[in-house]
Length: 183
Image 1 (cartoon, one colour):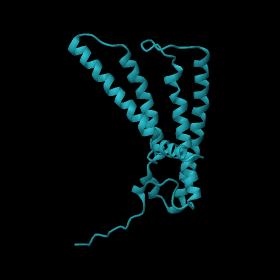
Image 2 (image 1 turned 90 degrees about the horizontal axis):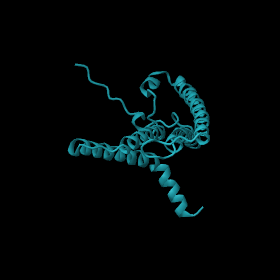
Image 3 (image 1 turned 60 degrees about the vertical axis):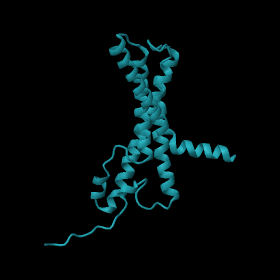
């Protein structure tokens, strides 16, 4: 594999989700600002800005969810897991992630089914005039990215010697607990 392609893949692996989500948030802010200025400053409005902001919001949310998986901050209460005895922590995380993987698989299945319907029955967005299949594809893209990131965590955990819990965030690494002196 050429070094430039390897570097591009490394860059996408490290920054894809936050780049897309940040771009979408900027588009939302610009659309809303433009709408406010036009509406209150000039007494007119654009129809496409609200639709574009709505599509970008969905993309930002799903990209943020995938980013949360990559950084291991997604819908879990690690404090509760660490409060359990050590022998129960790994099985609980494994079961929870397996259920999550099953849920992602179902969402991918039904998302692909939904996109199939959109492909066969064209639906055009009213303001932008684009085929709805493109903005709605975020369902499949988002759950696919979440699944890939979850599997990456386990591959890295497995090849890294299965030390600690899979993808344990650095904020939850064991630290020396200082005991307070009694008065």
